[in-house]
Length: 171
Image (cartoon, rainbow, N blue to C red; front, side):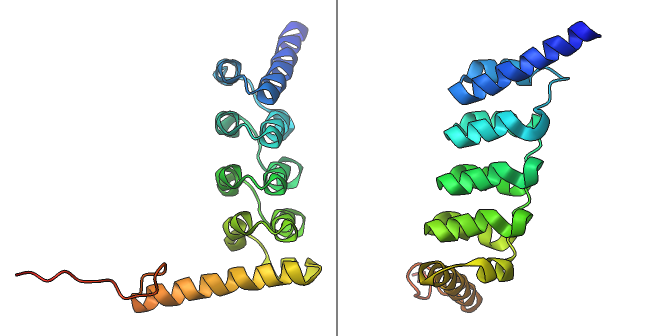
């Protein structure tokens, strides 16, 4: 039993190093082992921190993206990596730590990440924690954009041009 545990621990360290180094082949090999799990989501968090999107995709199924109160999502938001934020939202808790990921995006002025996180965050908490006019203005801008888009869709306007769609006539 001790030997199996040692092999598993060795694989975990290899997985973390491979995630850090963006070693896709090693990550694929190690993630194909049925018993290997990324305990505490460490390898996932490392891949997120380094911005290795393909590693993140491979690690999500064997990791716990909610580990450490969805720290991987907070790291992705702090790096402004909207692609990784988008990958992690469905498997994370955006409301963890009082919607910290959204608060990071707002504070950093990262509108794209904030827009992705908005529907999954506790906006009242975010508003209460927002410091400074820039953060509050960005949050107001995002909410205004969402309302404008909803209204445009409701009345059949093209949200991008705010014009009614042109119908082609048949002759």
